[in-house]
Length: 390
Image (tube, rainbow, N blue to C red):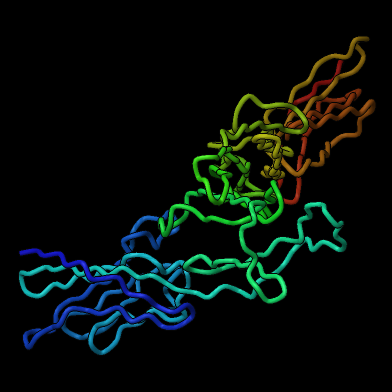
C-alpha cells in the first residue's frame, strides 16, 4: 500500500531554522523515515536524499551533499530541521515513511521570505537643468523575496504619474519559478540600464507605458559566458608506457569551439595517451572560444624512462681507414654515453627521447667495445666486436 499526501505551503523567515512536519508515528513500531529533496540537492541538480533514520535504533544518517550536510537535523518527533534558511531552500521536501509493508510519502513546499538589503541609489546625478528631463539615479533593493517594491519620493511624498513616467517589465527564467517577471518603473527617462549583469540576465525585456500595457516593445538580451576546466594541468611527469587521461569540461552560452596545439604546432583533435611514448612529451595548449570570449588551459607533459640501448653497430669510414661505431638508445632525461675505447670525431643527437651517438676509432687489434648509457633512472650496456685490418 502506498499513499502520497501534499502539505500546504510553509513560509520560513530567512536565516532562521525551518522545521518541516512529519506524519505521526502512532503507537506501533518506530517507522523508517527518509527525507528527500525533490528539486535537486546534488551537484547536477537531480533529487537526492537528505537524511534517513533507522527503524530499530533511531540512528540518523545524513546523506546530503555540501548544500545541507551541516545544516540539517531531525527532531524527536521526526520533523526535519534546516538551520540558517536561505532563498535556495525554497523548494519541495518529501518524507517517506516505511512501517511494515506500508510505504507513505508526505511532501511540503517551503517558501523563504527575506527582507531586502537597505536600498542603494547608484549613478546619482550631481546637477539638474531646469526644464530638462534628467535621470536622478538608480534605486536598487537586492536579495528580497517576495521582490521588493521601489518607491521614489520627493519632499517626503511619493512621486505620482504625471504622464512622463515609463514602466519597464523584465521577464527572466527565474529559479524555482517563484514569479514570471519583475516590473520596474523608470521615472523621467526613456532608457534602462542593467547593472551587475550575469548569465541569469539573459531573457526577454519589455518596455511599455505604465498606464497602457498595449503600447509596448520587446527585445531579447543574451549574455555570453564560458566555463572551462582541464584536469590534470600544470607540469605532469609520467613514465613511458603509462596511461594519461585528460578530463576537459566546457560550458558556454553557445557551442564552444576547441583547438589544441603542441609545442606551437596545431593538432587535429584532442590527444589520447593510452600508452605514453617519449615523443608524447611537450607543451600542450587547449584554446576555448565562444562569441568573442576566449580562454586557454595548458599543461607540460614530461615522459621519463630508464635508458635502453636499441642497437650498436659498426661501419667503415669513407676513406676505409677507420671504423665508425654507432650506439642508439632511448631514455629520458637525456642519457650520457661512455665508450670503453677512445675515439675521435664524436657526434651525438637527441630527439624525442631517442639518442644516437657515434665515434670513429682505428683498431690496432681485435677488440670488444662496450657502450654504456645512463641517466638518473638507470643504465644499460651493450658490446660489439671490432676487428683490426691485419
